Image (tube, rainbow, N blue to C red; front, side, top):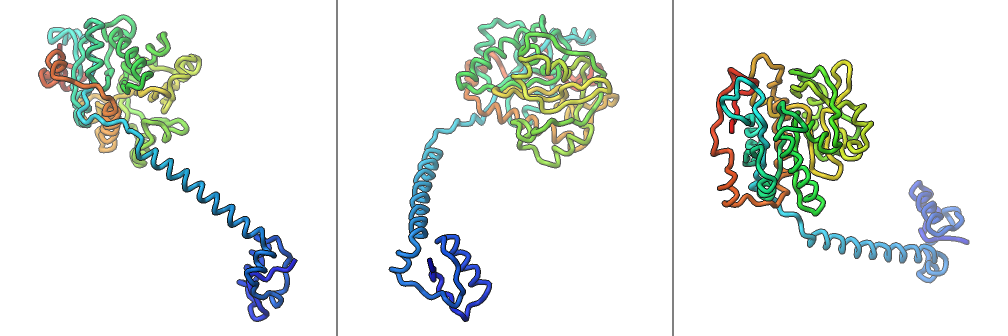
Length: 373
């Protein structure tokens, strides 16, 4: 079968002509002829001699039309789909704990370090202190009024303290709420991280490590940049976190990778984002839940900008402070997704932290300022 669709003549023995002939072979399935034998075809010739090209073009146009219709439908659905409104007045609860410093008991029986409050406020949240030893009914009322919960570091018992009891109530409420589409995030720092491991596994699986007052870089796991917590982190900050000793560790107990891997409940619930090594043991330093907005860090981001004890190994370089505010900004943005409302009635019954006065304790404790209750 001859094909002269391109109209080449003996005067066009060029590379362009050869490409045209090759294109004719591809579209029409025709055998090539010398360029001198190619002549323009009439409309009738094209219809008769190259039906495959016509049919292919028609099919392509049909497919394109279908794709455009489907795409427009998808766009219309995306544009009209209701989006979760953001709450730009988030209120986050920080759980108090029993005062476990003997020299501070005279100041109050429970406390919250001011650095946690300052960090959240710097990211645009308000804070209410959640007292220990309230009734479960009161905790339910508080849960319905706040947009997230921070479990701070400290030194109380993870199973039998008022801190542990209140943590479990809020943890169970948050599980049930998120399962129903009621977004509610939880953040655990140090002791709070450890508390999350106990609440999820139902066991105390911690191991002694040499990690008291030491700053470390994070050993990130694979695909960490696809995680919820770190997917939007600036690359220079990510590089600094993985190469510089920015994360302040103040804990004697850690969750080892070995114990984590051996526990099916933890393994299925949490995605490990970073680990660290104390010279003997590899332990988990950062994780997030797969299916819930729950996050935990074994280290202390709030200490970098707000704790200044000279004898402590806390980094105050610019990158360390940026890490603190990145973490705070992330969690406050998570809280903005919660639609719980802190009403005037709730504020009257459970007042914001502004109603309390911090105490300077930098000369007698590891914290510059503390709130006592």
